[in-house]
Image (cartoon, rainbow, N blue to C red; front, side, top):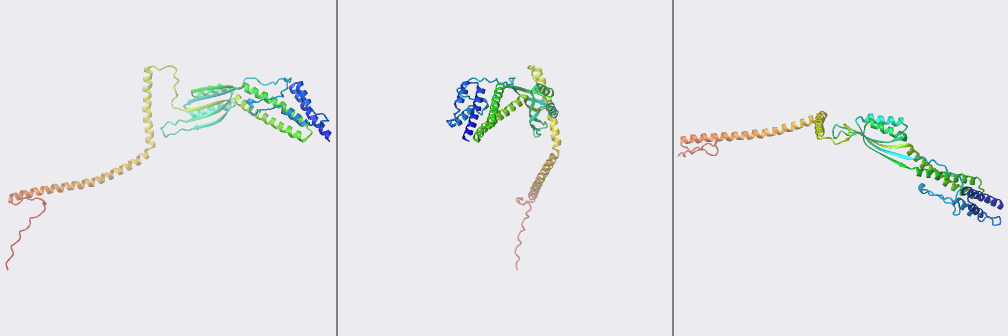
Length: 368
């Protein structure tokens, strides 16, 4: 049994040594692998060390940009066939567009139809339907993130320019060719190691060997899946350009000024703008008045009732004041008349209370 285990260990070490020899093409590296193989007399004391060194010669950093494969210090230049990867330019294009339109719904529908017809899709949509709080003009906006096939990007921008007024446009192109090629090369290397580890696993004789190799194999496969996911993300960004589109609904397009207008043109435009503002003001007032007529009638009735009540209160006060003035005037006239009569009869003039009657003289007491 001990000889069988030793034979299995020697077989695994031999396969590892052959793999290192084929991958590196270095006689020195191969010889060191063979030096790690123990003789039957030594009882396989060096086995674990040899397997660990042979498999662990490949070390990977999980960050794709700093990925590296470290060979044994004594390994020479690889004699394997060079890895063939796609070296075509890998460009990620991103565009930013601001567009005005007088027909918001129509432009929105045209964009959807063109994107669907070109094989693209709307990644995100954010719309604002405006507010009537500040006046009659309801300005709607939409922010779209459009993914369009890269070869249809120029046609898409042309379609937008024909349907609306583009006020701002910028475009950015990112070249990721080196990153993409490096990532593919690293994935190819990991695939080769995966194949070797699978071969080792098929020829493993002990449970310990299987566990160790499966652990390494799981690690390699995880890195391969991560790289493939990153490559798929790059492929999507390369094949589908991203367009950040801002749509604004306007009454008048923003003019594209190619030269400085003359003084006469500026006066003409200013006068025309003022007439438009006046007309728009009358229209706004008419719309506001009609839409608020019930509200205005209600408050007119309330104000009218309050005014009538105030007038009623003031009328009572004025009547009382008028009556008091009339009484005072009548009193003054009566006093003047009494004074005149008293002057004629030789009695004292009347003063004070005009209504006071002269006291009757006391009759002499009759004698009994």
